[in-house]
Image (tube, rainbow over all chains, first blue to last red; front, side, top):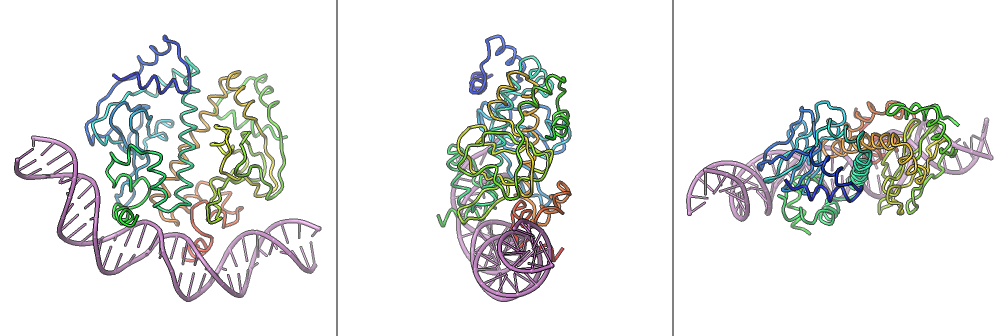
Length: 190
Length: 190
DNA sequence: CCTTTTTCTTAACCTAGGTTATTTTTTCCC
DNA sequence: GGGAAAAAATAACCTAGGTTAAGAAAAAGG
């Protein structure tokens, strides 16, 4: 169970005592996923915050024509959830799937809430995490409104250099909002 | 100074004692804006969280062709900021403008930080606010990736019924991601 | 190492939405 | 209330990106 990565991730924003670290780590439950294994399906309630230690997850929706739209990738050192479902505890709309053999650490909703009360620093930690996620989401929205597919791809390359080489192109195409066919056309002419 | 609306906004997520309420209210500075007056320009540092009590603000960017892209509307009872600039205290990319005579209450970055330490409930409050904003932003992103302009407009109407009638159509067009000309064409055929 | 599945490419054709330009309507504000 | 400014409508034409279909290349996984 790779808790080093997790503790370093936390230490970027808050400082924990050894006791607090131990208490926190005791709450995290490890899980391994095979390639293509689903962590969460649309219609289910998201009951955990998920921290990735190895491999890669992706979250996506299915539209009414059955096409997938990638919302997020989660390589090691990232947190992921169906945030809507997690905070409301109602059935969500996202699928979360392992793109390769993946290892995660899970924190249950109940334990996370408890942690907020017991150690307020964790409320700060997750506030900061969500603030950053919100800023990224807004920036991506503006990029989708104002840039061409070509430019969005360039930004993707800058932001996730390691994913560009390791992920199937069709997944990147979906993330930046074009079809694999158009993505292919675009790559030829650039 | 309309602090009732603000206190009710806060009370949706946390419970404050009368003393805490008074302490908090003392930190809020009122400001009035005329129609078209700018609260924030791209390149400036966003130094406050802004709560709208009357009128309406909008945030937008300018792209390299000089076109505006509306990121958010803030009618009464909403919080708004250039979140990137506010959390990093670096120059931002957003313009925030009053669409009509508007009244706001400002909370400085320093006071907000102080408040997190003094009354941890406020850290909870802003965590929850940002979580909800993040969920909305992600949903809007997915809508932009998977729906037609027509469908995005329908969703806008459901979500902001009061804005549909009060805002200029070109602003709504910008928010849903189309030109005013196309918006006009779309409205004729529907 | 071989078979199955998935991914990638190509190409012809199509469409949602953009661009440019002009006119009409509405709103602002003195 | 009236002149200026902003918003809205219309129309002809344009293009980024989508669709369909089919074959080629690459991985996955036994």
